[in-house]
Amino acid sequence: MRKVAFILWLFCSGITDAFANNPLELYGDKIEFDVMRNGEVVGEHITRFSQNGDELRVSSHMNIDISLLFLPVYSFDYAALEKWVAGKMVFLDVNVVDGSDRVAFTAEHQKDGLRVQMDGRETEIMSDIITTNHWNVDVVKDNQVLNTLTGNLNAVTITPMGQEEIDILNGSMKAMRYDYSGDLMDTSVWYDDQGRWVKLRFLARDGSTIEYRCRTCKARGQG
Picture 1 (cartoon, rainbow, N blue to C red):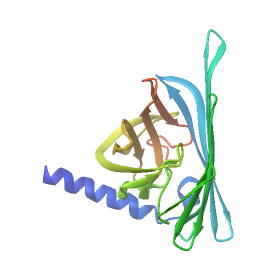
Picture 2: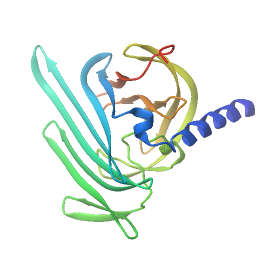
Picture 3: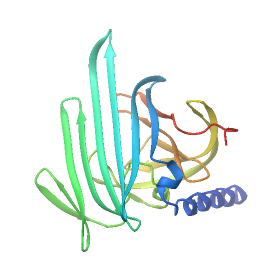
Picture 4: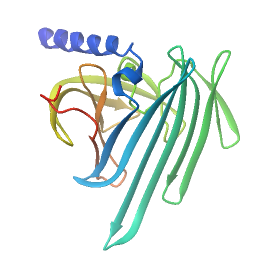
């Protein structure tokens, strides 16, 4: 058991060190996923990266459209913009349309942390928080995350579960699985050995399984 734990620690240390690289070097200008519900493609998630001087900009967009007998019964649209300077997030803007419900909030760097504004209310949170947008592998070292669907801080434990072979659009690849527990349950995320986010799976409110299948990842043997 100790040997297994040590191997997992070595792997985790490797990928978090790898993330010291600029995300543009890891991902290029974007990473794309098919969003699947119970094995059927129902939408997409695209995260784009760009550099503006010393500022890294990360924009994420996800949509889900579900139809029954060709009639639309549910839609979900998510958009977030993060701005990072010197390895810290200094700005966040989130807009979520979940059926008929809407969530919108911003977070901006202040002297003592991040000021979150939502529904006319302001709260202060720590400045080194990482969001649930998943592209930043450093999140696996943390025990709190900023939930971008709700604007709330979530207490979490993120546990490495070992390497697995995962399906991607053009084949398969090996990646390290991490399971969330605490305020975020029934959520698993996978990163490759370079620290790239390559898969996500979680249980939706209706009990269905939502899974992200990478469209831009390279299958094993593709180099």
